[in-house]
Length: 229
Image 1 (tube, rainbow, N blue to C red):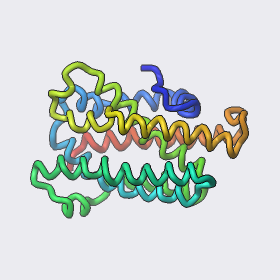
Image 2: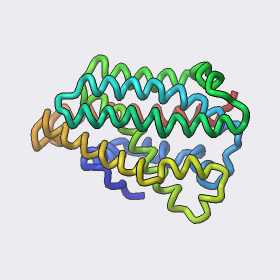
Image 3: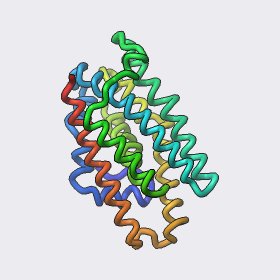
Image 4: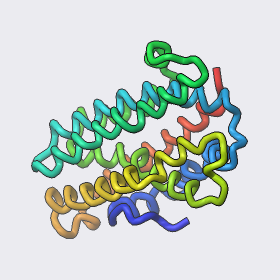
């Protein structure tokens, strides 16, 4: 599948991640979401872990707001926190509530090792680096889910499957617009800090490596999802 139009940096980072990007976006967990064969226990296990993940992910976006250099960057980071808190996290709670899992139970979920590794990697990128490091570490999740959602949402009959709500969230225009905005933000932030020829700057290779590492951690997160406790 060709790269969705989420900006120039994303296309380059995506290509540079190589096989890992395919392993992430076409993982068996993702395929199971799309065709409805994913065991419900695995999906609920994933949702509980992902809810905790999103708490840390929101903190990482808040850190990006603190490291921003322009009002545009500040606004975009703040909007990402808002989207996580008002769209993604409520979706998780709503689905879990349908099987009797309340918010307190979800929030008390013990983090799996794969969850710890991924979330702390992203936060460390922000603590030890700058705004661009955070964007490179955050992008695989934000933009990868957009790519996954668009592909699954285009499949005939997906709206009748057991995971239609999950797919609709990431295939929907609100989330797709967020992905386009984040992609444009990354491109503009690179140009601001590294100049118009940012793709040739040695710093860009470091950022690409961050993106690739976060992509591999996404694969591990899906692997974890297939092993319900």
